[in-house]
Image 1 (cartoon, rainbow, N blue to C red):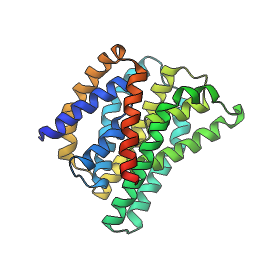
Image 2 (cartoon, helix red, strand yellow):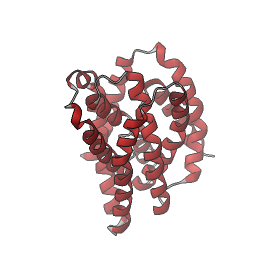
Image 3 (tube, rainbow, N blue to C red):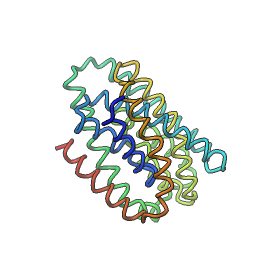
Length: 251
């Protein structure tokens, strides 16, 4: 058991519990930049970490009726095939480790910058959101496909970007249902993508266990601290961090 990973899991668990986002957005770059973990291993391990930690959220939100399962199905119709296709591409392109690391790092940096922008302008996006009613199903499937590829390559996007997509396509959907639906979709997506990385040999199970030991109590504590800290402040700090990290990875 590595105390450094456990402590990191605790801190990030607090962030996730307080903001609802930040797991993949912070975990993967932390593993790469601080612990020197290879990009592919950081992504693969974080995907399984996300699938496990968000499963409890699905149970809670589902029991309270906070999940729109029709939207989850539409998102999954796009995201799961996209995730599988992305894994097959990584497996069959036969690119060397350096090229794969570069691809994943760049994708991660772009995903972090998009996530930061989504966090900063989430309220404005809600105000301008909405597409013709007959096009919502197609838009949802397409959004799922984009998220599937992005999450598989970077482990980022299932939280903040998924939420923003739902807010834009379904501006009348209550906020609590946006959160519950996004979490319900994130679990099968990160599980499929994570298992794909297991097949590629890019998951460190020892590291995964150490992260979970810290993050599970961290998420519990963070969820209780959330009401005491202004959401605007938390989002501003998190968005600034993501912009800095994303810029470092891209440039």
